[in-house]
Image (cartoon, rainbow, N blue to C red):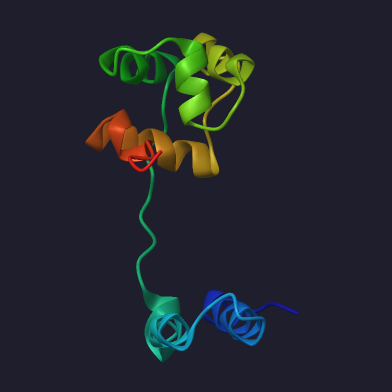
Length: 113
């Protein structure tokens, strides 16, 4: 049985509201997002990153592989594999790299810590 993103979000919001994880205002905000045309909203395509792209993004931000891995919440080994071309960033990692490329590493750092 296939469910739409809208249904999943609505069900999750209901559960979170029932368990006091979302207050009424937050619940209503999520409910507004679950409008009938939500399934037709464009999902942004994230570019594919080459080994050189990953290395360039990291170096432009002036950080080592271990620091880059920590900020991206991944392992140093995976960053090394990306930079060697042994693996390619996909999914959430590709989206994070896209954000870092566009906005810089500071967009991922917790400024309240």
